[in-house]
Structures are given as structure tokens and as C-alpha cells.
Image (spheres, rainbow, N blue to C red):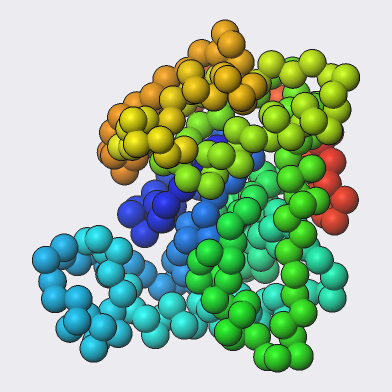
Length: 289
């Protein structure tokens, strides 16, 4: 299970994520609304641009240019992506959706676009994507501000999808987590072991058996993004005998190196079978193969 924090897509990580999905090197993604929005933006044919850190931000505001550190984007084009997402949501049935189902259907909606993206690849490969803080992004803005008043009845069922996530722990012999950054994706994937243990107290769970994190955060500030996997053992999130590694490095440096190494060993690492999922309204995990 792969936790992707921050805004890695405008930082150039979209095609790397597509490679991991298409080759089923990951089975489930938990990410931020920012990554999903920017993925939609690029899949629709819009761009992020290399900019500068020391530019005058007041001038950028006048020019309607948005800045993400050294990356620029056109605010007008962001608005077009907002409207695309809002128009898609307005055509859905009038019922609650999990973010997993919503994002699967959005990926299918974009399947006829020429540009490849994370949502497109995941919907085709059957890889579920969860976004627990989806309103904390331009997707939330799109649904709140761009939908017509009579269409604003759209709701996300976040509680149901948390119980869905618990199935990963309950129906897997062992689980592995990989985190790019920390934040909500990290906590969400770690807490599913705890959630599953409370839901099914008679099932003995050990926590995630394998864990990797690429981060520049450090543990002494007390934040979740920097906390160690050793700390996670106290909660039952991480197995006591887990094989775990922290890589303290900018993810935009480390992730391309690691994925390139995996690509070089693609034949050796090819999986004989992968989990299958029902990505419709009633989620289920099916036998491997």
C-alpha cells in the first residue's frame, strides 16, 4: 500500500506513479487531494511550469500565476480543471460515494484522453485510490464552488471507506506500506491495522510487516510525518519484527532512483499474482490471481 503525500505530481512524479500502477508494483494508494487534482490537470492536457523561488509573488498574483515553491501554474487553467471535476460529479447518482469509488469513476471518465495519468492507470489496472482529506484541495473547491446550488447534495462516505480499508489487514497474510512524505496518507494507512483490530477483536493482527518512508521530516518535533516506525509499534500499527527503513531524502530525488532500480530488475521482480478488487459500490477483496 502506497501513501503519497504533498503535491508530488507538479513536482514531476506522475509518470513514475503510472509505472508503479501499470506494473502492479503497488496494490492500493492513499493520497492527498492535491495529487489527484494535479493529476487530473495534467491528464486534461494542462501543464505545470518550472519557475523560480525568488520571484515576486504579488506580481504572480496580478498575472494569475499560482506558485508551488519553484513550480508555476496558470490559475485560469486550474479553473478549467475545477469545472471538469464539478461537471463530472454533477452527473453521478444522488447517493453517497466513497472517495475510492469517486476516483475510480473519474479515472474511467478520462479514459478517452490521450495523456496518461494516475487515475486513468489505476482505474484500468483495478488499483483502488483513497483520498481521506479530499475536501482539503482544489477538488473540494470544485465541488463546493463550481457545482450549481441544486447539485451541491453530493457527499462522500468517509466512514464506510475506513471499514473498507480494514479489509486489507483482515484479508492479507501480511501487508507492506511505502510512504512518500507523511501527513494524512501515512496516518490513514497505519491506522487501518488498529481499525481492523477493533472491528474484529478475535482476529490476531500483527501490524504492517514491511515499511518504507521517504521523508525530510524528523521525529523530535512530535509530528506524525516524522515519527519513526519504532513508535508505530506501540500502537500496533507496525509489526514488532517488521522490516522497516527510513530514507531521509527529498522524495523527488529518492523515488526516481528507487523506481529506476526496480525497472532494471523488472523481470526478476515480476509478481506471479496480484490481489483483485471490486471497485464498484460494494467493495471487496478477492483471491489472488
